[in-house]
Every structure is written in C-alpha cells, then in structure tokens.
Length: 384
Image 1: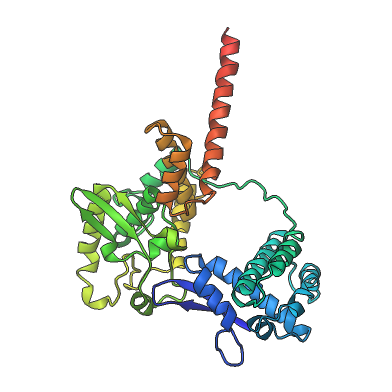
Image 2: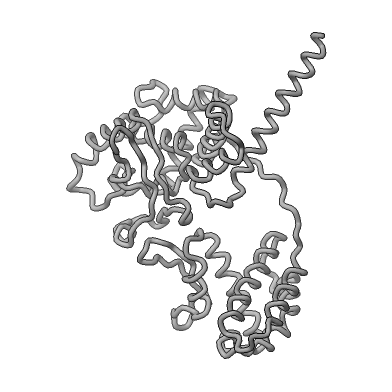
C-alpha cells in the first residue's frame, strides 16, 4: 500500500490509501476520508492515512484480511489482536525510525476513531461491547505526555520598522531589482497586516483582491480543480482547511499598490499568462514556495547588514506578529474581553471555533502584562 495525494473537484486535497499493485483506492479508508476528513488539513489527512496503513499492514502480517473482516461485521479476529498491534507499534521491530511519544498517541487515536466508525457502520450486533473494548484498549495505552509550552517568534516594533524601511520600493536599502520591488513589498505587507499563511498568499488569484463600496478586501479561498490543473508548480499551495476560507480587510494604500502592480505587469503581459495567480515570477509563472523563501532570505541578509541585532524574519514570523498585535489592539484599544478577542482572532486568522491557538498569544500577553505590573509595583515601593 502507498499514500497518494488527491485533489477533489471541490478544491480540497486529501491523502488517499491505494493498493500498490492496482493503484486502486483501499475502500474503507477512502470512505472514511470522504465522510470524516473533508475540511481537515492535508497534514492531518496524511497522518491518518499513515496510521490506517500501519493498521492494515499489521493485520496482513498475521494473516488477517482486515477489510474483509470489517465489512462482514466479524470483529472478533480484529479485537483479540489489538494488544499485539499496540505492542508492535511501541516496540517498532522493523528498525525504522523510532516513533515519538506524540506520534504514538496520534496513531492510537486514529486507530480508535477508525475502528469505532467501522463498528458503528458494519457491526450487525447492536451490543455496545465492541465500542467499549475500543475505548478501553486504546485510551488506556495513551502516553498522555504533556506537550511543552509552545514558543513562537514574532517581530518587535523596532524590527517591523527596520523591515518596512528596507522593503519599501523607493528605499535605497531595498536589495531587489526595481521591477520586483513592488511585488515583494505587496507580499510582505499582506503577510504582516492580514496574518495569512504563506500557502494562502501563493494561492491568491487576481480577483481575490477587490473593492466593495468604500472598503477593500482580500479573499482567501480554495482553488478550483480547473485552477489546480493549470498550476505548473510541483508543490502546489493550498489553504490549510475549511476554516481558512475567509475575507480580510486591507488598507486603501495596499489596494492601490495592487492596482499599480497589475497595471504595470500583469495587464501588459496578459497574452503570456495562462493562469490567474496573483504573484508571479519574472517568467510570469505562479510564484513557488522556494522563490518566496529566497526573497525572505535576501531580506534577512540585508537586515543583518543594516541592523545586526534584528531578529529572523520569515513569513510565519509575520503571521505571529499579526496575531500578537491584533490581540493587543482588541484588548487595549477596543477594550473587549479576552474571550471575545480570542474569538475574533480565530476568525481573522482562519482557525476553527475551538482552536487553542489564540491561547498561545493570550498567554504571552498576560505574561508581559504581569511582568510590567510587577516592575511598576517594585518601582513604586522604592519610590516610597
């Protein structure tokens, strides 16, 4: 068995488990993917497919046709070998790369979810015994190791000022050729002031920048199957999941910059361009992720020359910077409560309604405020 990256007609991308001999999809994992993984990120889809692949390969190694047993509702041969499956995963006897604690728990959760779905769908006996067995076997085997507190690298205000002074198209510090300066400035400004992911940036089409009344917006959406088909990039960018679909307001200045960019480049070379992607290389092909990385490498090199103490600037660091500054604005300027602020942050950053990501920025904000207040307390005690 192997895993194939598939593009569906609705623009979503998923990992599909296929038979190596026939290249046909494995039936049960395909149905599970279509019903339960649509809207999930490709990474989640791929890791789930990898988990199910391990499940099938284990039962094949002990002479059990997993799919045949499940479809026929004969789950006894499967359940009596669950402990052996977990032991095989933990000991990793094939001398492949070791499974981390986090991967081990993810595999177990994937096994549990997939098997519970199969029992619900194919078990002919309404007795809930099998569901109980699945819950107990896998839940009791989870390592439940706590994840270390996540750290993120955002840019301080001074670094943002340095970045702006370098990337401005008219700046004498700008390291790029004149014909690419406006494009590069627009990309940096979009990342910094909308918080979009780099894949979302490279996936933008010309009509996704638009005016509605007196306001200006960028639309983040899935590519259609036709747009994907004309995309020549080997690594095609895409949105992360369904929650990534959103509309974010931009400034009039940024919108005018896009109008100038399109008038100066895209419209004059329209006959040479057979795609609708917004950002292109100098050969008018859709910009690739490695080209974006190269642009930021040059920006970083110039920053180190002009400002040796500047922190590292990456597309994702700009996303962190946006989220951090947006949260501070909502709390201090708009004076809304923390829960409402986190909900707005989820919406504008493209996270699900239950995503814990805003907690990451809230934790840092609270820590900064706590230290500032402590210093104020100490200083006031000395003054008294």
